[in-house]
Length: 397
Image 1 (tube, rainbow, N blue to C red):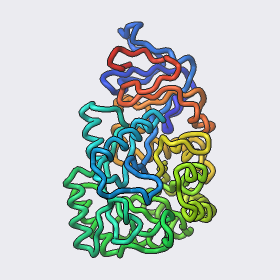
Image 2: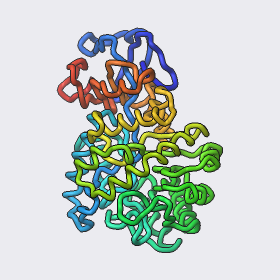
Image 3: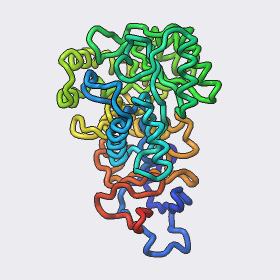
């Protein structure tokens, strides 16, 4: 069993019932029929992956986005991406901007059992300044604290689980920079106020440490990208117990960008940013900041010989995490950040049966995640490459 908080190399038995882990022990519980037992043959069992920077509806290249696209088309594209993520081992996905707030719809459809998807934590539509990083993506465009606060309330009342804002520029568009501020501290505070009124939190696209420090003061608790972060800001984030998803794959996936039609300026922006990006992630690791796995590009997409979600875990090791820490950053830590650690993120009795079967131990070598052989999500077998998991006609182990 490869549980980041309670690892063991001894043979174990895990009982799954009604979609949850009933027990974890060294023997099969009494009374389990032979037909309901699955021998994994000495393989490794790990928690399902939790990724926290997902866009299922995104269009590539970005300039091809049609903000007036029919919601049904958005839903079909997004559902396909969600299924691919699930088969890649992602059993929980936090969405941080979806066109038409389609993640809310996907989440509710999954809960009704209408299609197979990871557990979705929906962000609805992101809030962006006019002409900012979110321009052209179907974001909600706001100017001034009152508009931002009203828009945040509206997204949450529409079913979003959290709120996403763009506080700096990024790398995707010509002429923008991660150093460019795009929201005032007053605007950030207004969004935080709305989120807190709904019992939730704010996640910020944040490219530069100056904007991050203002956002920390405003009450933002989750940060994305962190392309340029100095040591004092890293120390501040660690001190306040905040979370960063560095999305290192964004600047280290040139093959993927070329295959998806990104313009030369976008690819060049990513290439130039990659050195500072990795250096910033290493500062965050050295300071002890809680890092989480987030891909930005669809987590099931292929890049550098594997899926984006696995590649991101490998890049977290390159940034200085141990393999066990990178596994935690892809399971237990993001579950805690998203406030679903009572439900998923570990292999433990009482939690949802979100499980991966692997040939090798990813807590020793994170590249073992390239060898996922089976995926179980909420007790349902959604991938079984080797036919190891006995199931009934309903797909239940």
